[in-house]
Amino acid sequence: MRIAVIGPGAVGGTLAAWLSQAHEVTLCARTAFDRLQVETPEGPLVATPTVLTDPAAAAPVDWVLVTTKTYDAAGSAAWLAGLVGPQTRVAVLQNGVEHVERFTPWLPAERITPAVVDIPAERTAPGVIRQRRMGWIKVPDGQAGQAFVDLFAHAPIDVATTEDFATVAWSKLALNCAGAVNALTLKPAGVAHRDDIAAIMRDLVAECVAVGRAQGADLPDDLPRQVIAGYRAGPADGVNSLHADRQAGRPMEIDARNGVIVRKGAVHGVATPVNAMVVALLEAAGA
Image (tube, rainbow, N blue to C red):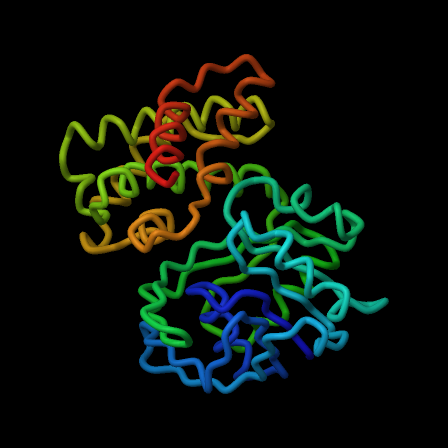
């Protein structure tokens, strides 16, 4: 298959490296580099996909995987005119719960396959990535979803369809929204071992659960506890993307990870004061 991956960050680079083992992969990036080097749980993985830096050089492919940050949707869309042909499928692998809505200004909704990704990875330099865990990807059940799953038949990443994509997306958002505390404190995952910090994280997740349920997601009562337990069981030096972006002085996905909870909570009359507070603090910190 001919696959284009828009965005050479930690997740995009990792997926491009794995897909390159079985498919013809083009990586759409701002800056050219020679190869991908991914330190995976199974050992080093090296790939040499075609790297394009000019959207005008793009040609139609079978699949486009959008793995950029949510705030760069317009930048990603610049590639779509060249990459998308009559039969091209587009998968959006981004944070948040608005995958389809984010790209309907440029594509019909039926051409978009939303995907929830949980692959802990960090980019240390252009093309150099540390993949901490194989992780998983979930897409909606159906023909397009199964075709996406088939792309990864050769890879050890757990890629599967789900009949309840909303629940999967809001469950992942519950994990992501708690990570705002790491961005605020500029402390890695181990900060969750502090009981006072864990209490704030639980409040963030509890608000996410309430809003998610209003949106139709089937979320368990103990999800806040599960999220904290996961943080405490994982590597203490883990750095989420919001934390990494603030530390590097880059834009942050505040709206996709916490702002969306506030926005959709307002629609349903669900109070979200803790998420509103961290949104305001992070926006001020990044100003």
